[in-house]
Length: 326
Ligand SMILES: NC(=O)c1ccc[n+]([C@@H]2O[C@H](COP(=O)([O-])OP(=O)(O)OC[C@H]3O[C@@H](n4cnc5c(N)ncnc54)[C@H](O)[C@@H]3O)[C@@H](O)[C@H]2O)c1
Image 1 (cartoon, rainbow, N blue to C red):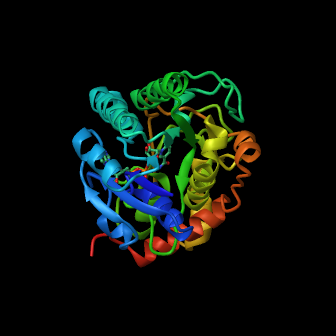
Image 2: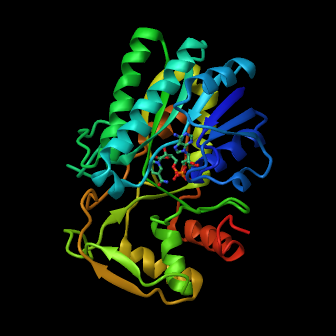
């Protein structure tokens, strides 16, 4: 298929692009590079340095390249930033997201794969979290993603838009040559490596008094390669699926302290840490049920084991201590 990937220069997007290209799809990328990296694409796809909110640019691309499907990953993503800057998050994730979909509809492009998030669920009422779990986000990041999901449901009913909405849990891990490089780095695994190697100060543990087995938050880490594989399966099956919201996680949770212990085992280094107060917007436990993705896509999180994830991320970190900076 001929696919436009928004945010394809970013962490998950660049792995999705690599997987699409490997399977023979033709890919174009729109990325404003506010976070992404040109080098993350390694020449796999043409990069258009632009904004998803630029309807003229997007319509031009959709028409010129006869695009058949869009994988939409571009977003403002830092959950705790969304608490103080909701305007940015609704602008980027809802208003610009809708501008993208409107351009698609105007150009007759009816297939969308959207990167949503476990943040749409808020503080869990039960775990593992399945797709029937109440949708009660506690951050404007989660709210902005949920509002977009809800708009898509109406567009599916009224305009026949086909949409697969993936609620990722914590994306993690690396492929050889493609890894995680956010600035500032807010994701746990690269931040742990930075602390372990002395590239940063101690790793801050936000909240040590949660009602969990060791007082720290529990998260479900899913290998970025497994996420990319889900996108590939969705591209193949979207005409059959038509409209679906699917959770993507490993279905097992690891606490922050357990993750640090695993990272020490993988790296052979001690990770200095610093206990900090809880951060607003952080639920205590997020663990997925991915039964529906397995059933509807035949998806499996086969690489989503903490040790496999950490080993791949550590290999990438050692080869790229400055991320994509030369
Ligand atoms: N990483 C995770 O753990 C995680 C978890 C849940 C959901 N998600 C979602 O997955 C997607 C990808 O996340 P990521 O971690 O790869 O983030 P990322 O920041 O690495 O990638 C996002 C990309 O979008 C680009 N971008 C942002 N705003 C843009 C705009 N207006 N126009 C064009 N490009 C723009 C950025 O430059 C960046 O390259 C996001 O939608 C995020 O909300 C990620």
